[in-house]
Length: 314
Image (cartoon, rainbow, N blue to C red; front, side):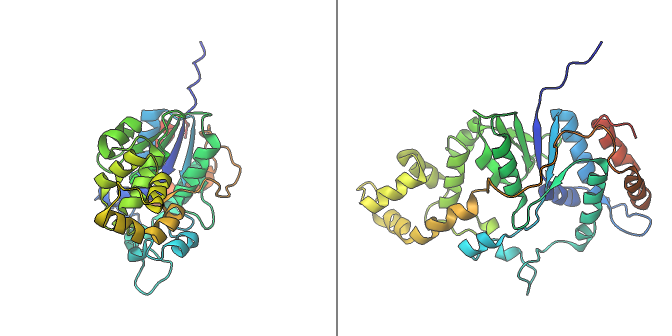
């Protein structure tokens, strides 16, 4: 008797978010025979296995930061992620050396198994996720796996796009964020409103100043009152009497910032990407390379767990 095919579902992984979490969450670095730590590699493989088992995707992409601080965002707001730069560098992100040495290994392992790793020169993984979401919008359910609230902007119930949020509860018990959750937590009705709220309030973790005096609740209330950031700005320009005093002054002073904030906050929907299938692999893509990585870094157990989750025989 044949099995009923799984309903189509696409998982888009914010890969760096996951391997950073794996590195800091898996305390046992369990070095390879040559002394290389492997906790981020093992943790990422186990995370993908857990996600595959829990959500039964038919399609999956590991989205990659080809550029973690794209020039077009820096040109718009110079402080964008500037506090994360290695001192004296213009492009290198601070990261533990014990993690940096593992990133090429985990990428090679995932690719050897056959999962697509997609990046785009000059763009962040967020933009890859935004572009793939736009490409598949409405065609199949999409789950965006991340620990970064910035991607809440993609939540769209009508198109069945949700965020599988790992920051609070980890991958195993990750929260599913839908529009009702955005309304309950932030007072905004959808993903776009969340993005506009975050423009107004700013984000110190990304070096975005926001508008002085406007926090999360005030931003959500202003958007509720006016319907959109564009309508709020039009009200400021037209002298709407409901906006007065310090609030009006701060919004007027924030004009230049609000002119460029969308370029920084909104994910791209048109990042150039290779045309590769996102369907789950049915066999190991590069057995020789995978065997070498398993032997060199003692990855037999996590690789076996992921292959089992993918229903691939070793």
